[in-house]
Image (cartoon, rainbow, N blue to C red; front, top):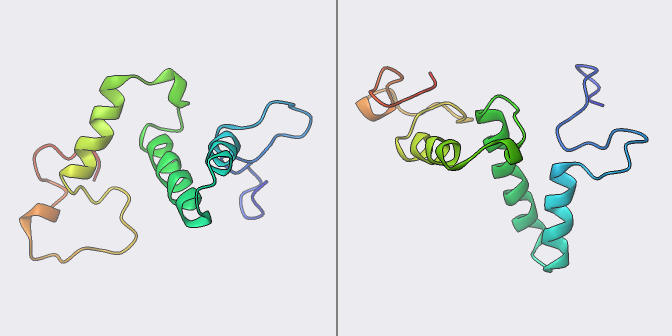
Length: 103
């Protein structure tokens, strides 16, 4: 559980659940392939971003349209998940820009 919110973290195991959580499965699959620790972190990061982008819905419930929407949002440069603010001088970064689904 997250100490700040009291809610379980995404990817954290629920006590007594038995089945590994999605992000644990991602980590295990990457480790079986002997990828680097940094690669594992990157895969988990992008999986988490995909899940949050779609309102914490499980990826098994999502299809091609949702993947396309996520990739288009990334390609358009929408600031939906950026950590650092982008320069405000460019219209490319404007939340009002056509096609940006998140502001």
